[in-house]
Image (cartoon, rainbow, N blue to C red):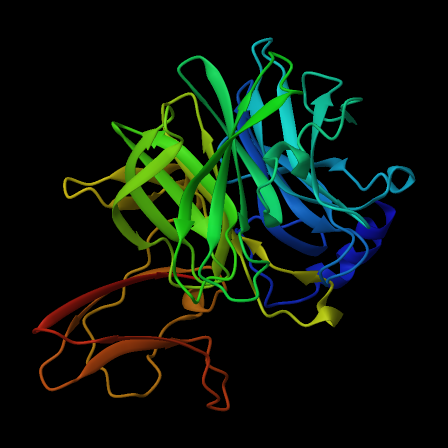
Length: 392
């Protein structure tokens, strides 16, 4: 915590650091972990290096929010137990047990095979945690003769009164690709400290996919959704889950996010909403004191054709102030004559273009006074009118 606090002035001094996307006070973050709604709070844990703005020394940072807009930073929740052979606390998920207490599950990494560990809270605020005395609760021995490589990232769900867990990995040690797998497990006791391996419920036979990370499997309406992070843009599959045969059967498939977002996690709130969390990767230089953010949270649903839909959480509307309007203007490639009230780093822009002889339309934002280009948003034109919305 001292290391994080010491880096805050440098991180806050960077004018290019996002303002309203969640991020730690300073230093590195990646995957969202253990996202859960508990006692009126949205809890977000996340992969965090408190010692610098590059990947390493994985801990679980922690924050909470009532509305997913304004966040309260909390003490680091989990860190490597060096005395027990841990070097990193990798990604994982959260679930409430039958006793109402939240459990955190994560992949424990050291100079040994990966193991799945559990932590339990020492208070109702979920501030202080202790690691379960029976760790590891799942190990490679649970697979019997089956070989699973790059095994990590537990995600938990409840169905038919039982608790299940999925983990990612592959069947050929990433050397050939085409054998990414999702493994399924069932808890054998109420304490969630004993588990049975049920089998591989999904395989990605795409040669470009060396491994499956951060699998999320959850019920959404009448269907089941599987989200995977295959070292490429995240993909989703909508279909049916057969727990008796330990098999997920996809019916539709799509790219979750074609941009730089990665490593999803899911939570469910008191309004019955299914919320998607994603790591928003950035290319920040190490000397900036920070690296990466969280993508804005989104509400998931399935459309009439069976494909996944994402909608920004309506709570984000509290970020809006009074609207600023620009009169109809002919675009010539020159800067628009706008007032100082438009010279901000946080503007939500809604634009409608009437394009007569243009093959593409767009905006250049944050251009410097000496003419150097800033961020460009460009869309190809198909028809006379085109609308584009953008948030900075």
